[in-house]
Amino acid sequence: MSTPTLLLFAHQARSYASMIREYVDRLGVTLVILSSKPRDPRDLEQLAAVGAARLWQVDDEYLNESHLETVLAQARDEGFGIVAALATFEGYRLLMAHTNVLLGAIDGDPSALRVCMDKLLCRGRLSEAGLSRARATVLDAATLPVLQASGRPLFVKPRRGAGSFACFRLDETVTPQRLQALREQMQSDKAFRAIFAGQFDFIVEDYVRGDEYSFEVLAAGGESHVIGVHAKYLDDSSGTTLEMGNSLPAPRLTDAQQLAGERFIDQCLAALQLRDGCYHIETRYDAAAEHWDIIEINARMGGALINQSVGVFTNGLSMLELWVKTLCVERDHLLTWRARLAALRESVRRRDGTLEYGTVFFSRYGERNRTLEVLSIDGLTPQPDVVEMPVRPQTRLPDSERGIFILNALWKVPIREIAEQLHALSAMLDEQLVIRYSDAAATADDTTTQEKS
Image (cartoon, rainbow, N blue to C red; front, side, top):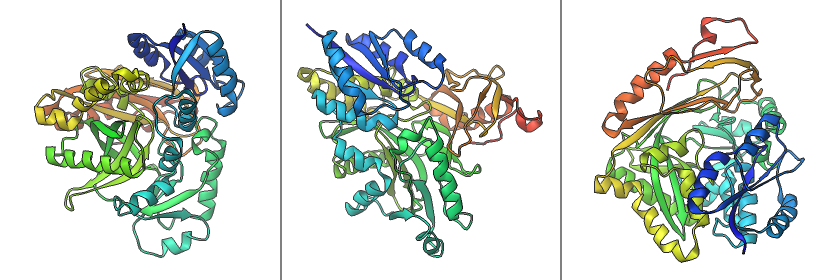
């Protein structure tokens, strides 16, 4: 008899494998991993240390469908009954969906996901359905002068996205040469190139006004379940728009506004025919106009500490664990599991008065094309409850305009204190966090962060 097994696609030996191993162990499911070629051998060592039942590594920088047949056959011959595939890296999301079709697992439809992940097609579909007031078009040398002369407030972004790369307002500084330089960055970025799926176009769309929020969503059987809504605190002084801070729940949203947001998300996923899957949906809310609109829909869980933040908010179930459970649940238990998801909706918990703790977390970014020497949180008071430092000391950071995370730090906070702690913790972090680079003379600017959330 074969062993129920989850197949994880790891990008260059980097993934959430240790977390996923813990989650599948609780379910009585075995973990096997297929990884692309690591850029750093230490990453493969760490991945192997997770102790998956089987680890395959291919000698290519990116996974694709050509790697599947052999791995699935070997898994079957070795007694692994693969029930589903999972990819947390956005560049493998369509590969995950394709694999789940082959396996008969429940997941988003690949054709619907393809539309969702193409920001031009997604905006067009939502506009046709009356769910977005923004219009989008391809930005190139021919359309650029016309759009610059239009007088419309417009926003530039890649047609496929990664890490807040090249997201900025359209102004007179945007030239064909600048766009070409950005395309070259996209094509040469070895870590993130796969996310663009060979599509290096830029689009421009109407600037969406309002406060920014992200909805953390699990869709199952055509019903969407908003587990939490993060408020976003942004900075665009670096040439691209970066998330500097988040809070869950969002202190500015009333119960009625949050519920209206959930219903808006229901409509958007239905219009895009996204019946199943995990989604990190970026939105803006214009309180004066009482209007929700979409920034973009990511067919994955959110990055930074979104996953762990949801875990605090739900009293123990992170976004990734909820996604793993949704993929691996036996069909006989589907209705019971969907009822559990329904009970975890933020709107339901707001209505029932069961919310107690939320989170405040901050992200800090490295300076492009510099070598990180020291990153120290020793002086932070209070210390974060969760911290991630994804860049090792002596690493030279990519020469890219995408946001390069060097620190994510989260604090668990009573909900009534979130607004106050947002300001206090941000100020403390900017004062006490130490960042130093080895390839430039140390100055005052080198030893503290300069971003403000």
